[in-house]
Amino acid sequence: MRAQVKRFFSPDIDDLNNFHPEDPESFGFLLQVMVGPENQPGEESFDVLVCTPKWLLQERGVDAVIFGYDKLIVFEYNFKKNCRCNYCFL
Image 1 (tube, one colour):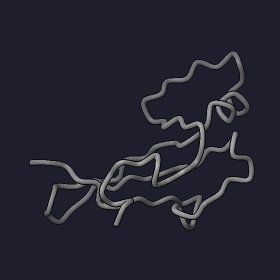
Image 2 (image 1 turned 180 degrees about the vertical axis):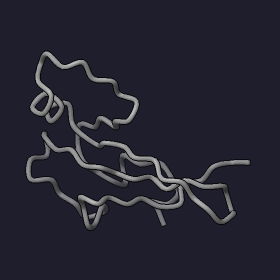
Image 3 (image 1 turned 120 degrees about the horizontal axis):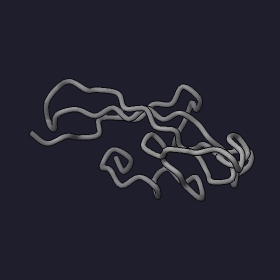
Image 4 (image 1 turned 45 degrees about the vertical axis):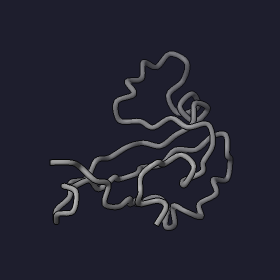
């Protein structure tokens, strides 16, 4: 069985494709990636915090220890450029 990204959702952002953060160097938001079996019904949600290094520093501070397993750290927001799945290019 192969997994497939079915769709994306963010409770923080209405339109992921046209979103422009107020501060392009410092932002963070929840992204839910819906993944399921390829060409079959069904999906599971995987939560990821999309953020910039500057946002992490501002939110957590220099003394924080941060595990990155649930984070997607980016240097700019460009949904179609940063994502390589077929969903974004439909």
